[in-house]
Length: 195
Image (cartoon, rainbow, N blue to C red):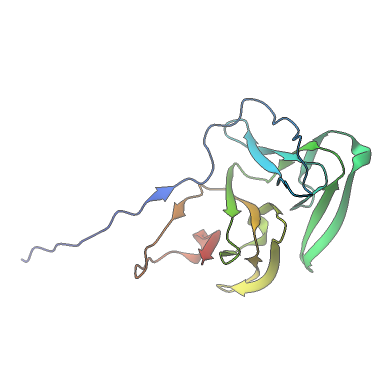
């Protein structure tokens, strides 16, 4: 019998979202989502395991969230507007705009959240299932419908911003170096990126 040696490089697997939830709801921001010093909404988990997210929205900001996911609002309701929009005929969402700083509590129907922070507009993310998208925001961020891995409700991101995704199972980030390959069950993928 021959001895077989297989060289394996250890993959760096990281959870993208902090495991420790914030002890309290985020304070409302004092900066705005408009002007020379723009701030994007901030996301923090509530509880452990975290079934809810607290979103802190600066004044004059916009946030897109899964329809029906808003649970609570801390702030002046008269300064908040929500409009139903459609990414596809089967994928609706709420476009939330505010004229004053507010905090929202949203439920993404899962406890495993991951924040995708896109700082380089050349970086493109493919979100493979519309039901994994919880929220997105950004000055130039757009989600465009596409069909990836035989999935009709997939989306490509364009521009800079933040996308929050979730899954009923643990979310892991796996980074492959150039020339490396990995075999993955397509049903276990939530999102992939290219630069």
